[in-house]
Amino acid sequence: MEVPVGQNHEQQEFELASVSNLSSSSSAVSLSPAVARFCFDSGVAVLRFHKDSESNEAFHIDLRTAQLFRLSPVESVCICETSETIKEKSYSRGITLQFREEEDSRAFHCALDQWKKEAVLQESGLPNGTLSASKSKFDDKIEASSAKMYFHYYGQLLHQQNMLQDYVRTGTYYAAVIENRADFTGRVVVDVGAGSGILSLFAAQAGAKHVYAVEASEMAEYARKLIAGNPSLGQRITVVKGKIEEVELPEKADILISEPMGTLLVNERMLETYVIARDRFLVPNGKMFPTIGRIHMAPFSDEYLFVEMANKALFWQQQNYYGVDLTPLYGSAFKGYFSQPVVDAFDPRVLVAPAISHVINFTSIKEEELYEVDIPLKFKAAVGGRIHGLACWFDVLFNGSTVQRWLTTAPGAPTTHWYQLRCVLPQPLYVMQGQEITGRLHMIAHHAQSYTLCLTLSAKMWGPGAEQGGILQASSCKFDLKEPYYRMSQPQVYPVAQDQPTHHLVNTQDIQTQSLDEEGSEFLQQPPENLDTGLH
Image 1 (cartoon, helix red, strand yellow):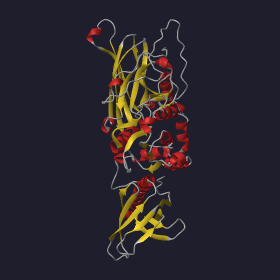
Image 2 (image 1 turned 180 degrees about the vertical axis):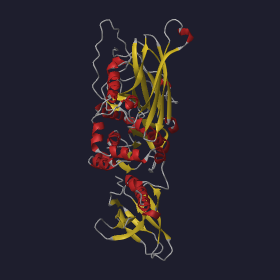
Image 3 (image 1 turned 120 degrees about the horizontal axis):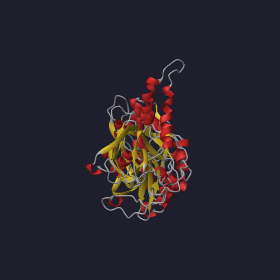
Image 4 (image 1 turned 90 degrees about the vertical axis):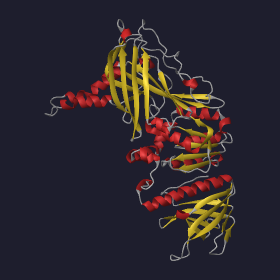
């Protein structure tokens, strides 16, 4: 069962058990069996009814005025306005539709809704399916240029392959679903941002009654092909092309599944779409896979990285570049390079303090709470040295009824396509072992589907006079999460001196947890700190 809609589709057919035309202005027509064909006729979306695929049309309706009502799981009635001639007044026509299976009915209802939307888009004459009179919540928040690039990117198979070949990511999702069959068997599932449809296929493998794979990009076309190529699973999957904020589904979901995580968990702002899907389609007390997310943060010391960042701007210190003095732009270039958060895999031994965590509970957080995230920072230095910034990574929990499984992007754990992220300060801080480090990470969402990060770190006075609480030094910087520096090198080997003590700051193993309580996050107050990786 598929719902292929869009301007690239010439037509779409459904086989029905029977169709009866109940119009009072003409003789009633009954077809059993029947073929319903969605198509465009001179730019107008219509639904034609035939005895079979090869026979001539028996009658048709204009989808712009059609309304479909469900009478039973396998029977529906379609009401529309029509007329025999241009001058004749319009009247209502009724058509009863009998389906063979309930799944056929679901797919047909979804198809009609999407083709009706396409009919409106055709009339609007606007490119890219944009409605000027009725903008969705997504369109209100996100710049059109950003959305176009975003959906173009995820509409390409090579990028989907990159994610599928992240075996930590894909394997963890598969294990989380299959190990929790009890949560999927006989349940209705909505796959939010389905991409290639791989998670929908996992849900079907776990025994889902029906899966609605919602995907807004052109990847929906490939998802249909992949799902059609796995018919034993595909018969329980409906692909719906459109944004979660705009599509309509015929029933509520018992469980949502999605991969909404971006760099630093929040990049691309898909978490908001995941929450909107929860509010629109999830039944009360329904499950969400993943259930919660955590952003982990710790100060780091990495002289190699700092020098690399600073040296990038040295080009602009040339006073005679083909007779031109470039130095007036040096300050701006230096600031620009340090405004880029660094995405790479780093050695966990660069961390100088145990990490702290910020928890986002997807089952209870409000969409608006993701517009601005303010995280107070407080650390105690495990070693002395120069602090060059804040290192960040994330993990998510699949809180299944049978097995609770974590997907982590922590340094020292198997590397994922998310890697880790570091915000490098232009002015390092000097700290001694045991010294307190405080600050704030303020994340503000912007219209380019990302966040502006405002980081401040301060080192309190150490030694005599410390009881007065004076601040010795502070450093701050603003970063654009949309424009990172993709360093993505292998972790640098940092030799540990023989007299250097080993510290345990990062967990590289699955974290054992108890079940979520009714509020959903009490057991997540603090992550474990007694971990297995050494620190330089």
